Length: 201
Length: 201
DNA sequence: ACGAAAAGCGAATGATCACTAGGTTTTCAC
DNA sequence: GTGAAAACCTAGTGATCATTCGCTTTTCGT
Image 1 (tube, each protein chain N blue to C red):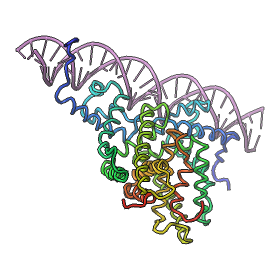
Image 2 (cartoon, each protein chain N blue to C red; image 1 turned 180 degrees about the vertical axis):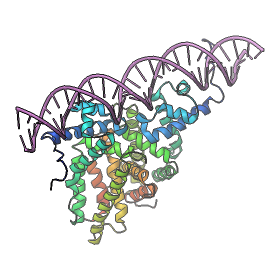
Image 3 (cartoon, rainbow over the protein chains, first blue to last red; image 1 turned 90 degrees about the vertical axis):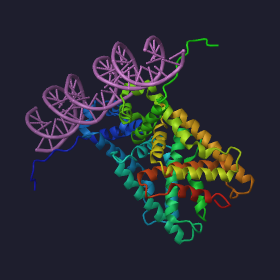
Image 4 (tube, protein in one colour; image 1 turned 135 degrees about the horizontal axis):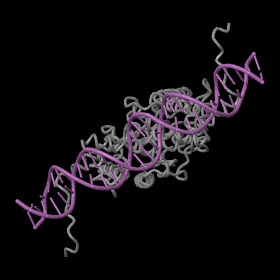
């Protein structure tokens, strides 16, 4: 069944190299944003030339997409539990916020890029729009399951609660990045959720 | 008392020209951030050359400072009332959020620049750090006055409430910029405040 | 109405950017 | 071990950037 000439696979160390590049990409795009972050600096951090880097990622946009994908992978495990208990899902999100406090680079990446990507012509605009829709429906579903169990304060709308929780998480990140001592992101999120629910967190 | 040679004043239309430049600056720094926004494009929008613009503002950093100052001026009237009623202060802030919904450019400027300025070497870093300290203490004071009047839900800490309110406002801006139909920033803020107080908003 | 300062311009400077062309070196399947 | 693809390099290209220099034009106090 070998129809075409076999295109040969990657070298053994290629995957690791690409990973190194992506991690440097997180650092650089975090500090300077996508538009101001340069491929040259990313390449420098990995110890290779610009052209060498561009052998792995055809262009800057493709590199950004791969960086965002890696970031999602790193966070994914906290948002599994599809059919789980609503409260457990919310607790998982707060665990994710706690984890974020240990990886300032990822927080910086998210804050910088999501702000930059509000511009409709930004290469990551569609990504962030889709992401917010997904996260929003994910959290709404969790609050809806809690509401069904009577775990929500009467009058609280699950969708509004979800929007508020996302806003608190994003807003706390900016304050935290400006002064990491001024604020505990997880505690801030907990405080908000406690105002909405009738059970222990 | 004319000690030195009088340095001559500006022309009559100079103030207006500078204002035009600053408004174009808001537009450009909103869309592309400070680092990626170019003086050339700002000059183009005002219909003058780069060099002509730099006659009014010595360099890009100075232009940014002036743009931020203008933005503060435009918002100032909502945050007067120094010794006022705490509840009135909070209501004023929500009025400010309502006003913000009518000036997407200013919201974009704030979101984009505050995220960019989390980097310690950003020319507006100090500005945003100072601003958050000031806004924080301003809102805390308002909640403290409300607490003294028994208008706060028992157990609510004025400082935490202030941090939360700022986070909600900032976070809602990002979501709103990504999709202006998805969210009512003022309503989002009101919902949060209602969870904290015992009186009508 | 004149003179000096303010306002503005064209052109250059040197830096940095993403990306490409065309080559050499490294890896690895056979 | 050999050959071909993958990995990587040097050296460009053309674009854009902030800033400067020297010059002309506009304004306006006297």
